[in-house]
Image (cartoon, one colour):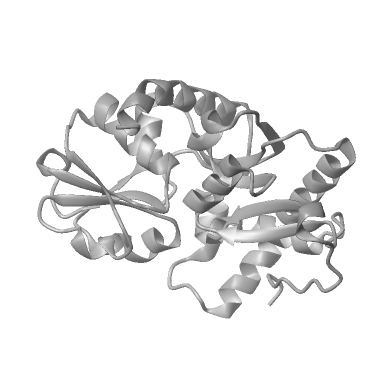
Length: 270
């Protein structure tokens, strides 16, 4: 399989540019580019695959230099630089960031918040206040929380898990689609962010590596489909639902989300 770390001649870790990437299916074209483009000297970089919340924490704590991070953590960074013209975004349905429930929205009393997520948790609370007009009890969830989604308890579930289980519930609210209803804009879930100024040479090489991955996206998809790892339609998900270009409308959506987040920050810190 091509998504394998196999570097041998390594520098000391302190000398490397450290990169954290979300370990979800939607990031695989990016990982392919980082590992296979030839644009980056693999002796000079360290790449970690992490769940989004860990990716975010590493960038905030400065244990990595670059992350494909949930955008909700951008205000937590002392300085930040958005790299490349690519992101994990959607315009309407995304199919992998969901509020799952067995009762309709107006009957939900408790919402469990996926511990994998920061942006999706914040987005859910924004939608509850500005679109759904509900005031549920919010609970931070832990491993295994999906089994507790029943009766009047709903749950925010993201990533590959959401794609696999979304049909198991009577009600499935797609958070990106709900954002579109509220704002008439697309949504950016994650983008490439550095927490310090990097050299122009490295930034250019990094951007070329990511672009190489996007140019080979269908090759990556075909390999994943051939592996038989997933039960859902990988091609449809990565070609129809996920949008990778960080275009002007997505930048507007991102800016609006960060504005809404300012109002929400005191609540999230309680």
